[in-house]
Image (tube, rainbow, N blue to C red; front, top):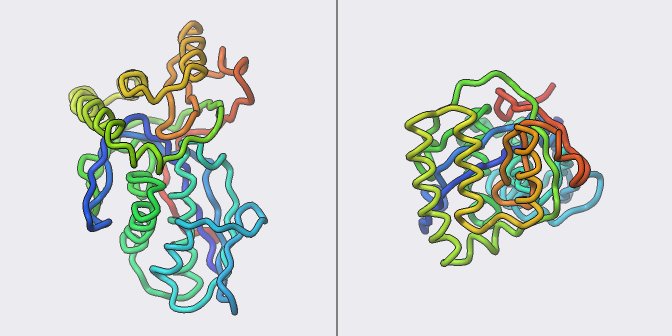
Length: 276
């Protein structure tokens, strides 16, 4: 049997991290949003375990961890990505979650949605590729993560679907940032302040302003990204940097196009799901 699933990209605007020896309890709090672009995965039983990403054999460690956690026999997995890897789009989490959903369908594992989401979350934590993206993908929209780890404790800023514009300058290693104690301390102080402020006035514009402040206060933002944000603001737009990736996301393409190829997507109000 063939299983097909899709998980949306997830961009985090700000966050703070929580470590725990138990990967189910580790995670992050913060706020981000899902996009209509994401990862589509197809899986089926096979004689050997194989993972392909965009048609090319891949190590894909986070996806392989999901397979180890769930599959009771070898599977062939093929994932197609709409967004760049390492750009702060939650590609590893989307790959892991869509794989979990596809494997469950292909092998008839009988797992619940949350069980599959938690497996993808554990795979992310173990490989240090993300802490909160999978949680956001279970709800969709602009998702507020109010407690770290599982079970996911989430809320959402009510909003209509709207276009988002991104320019990707290059990858940032999530693992390297999350492994730096000084950087993590700065992130946690700034992230807790931003979440507290957002909950006082949970609107899209406030989220955008707090995300920009977070990127500057933590020192995570690159000079090129800051230049792009300031240019967008000169056109009366709002912009910030994706966490963690050297990517600027904006409410308008004006000013952004001068910095590179603009990726246009739309905030998705749908979570990760099976495909027919």
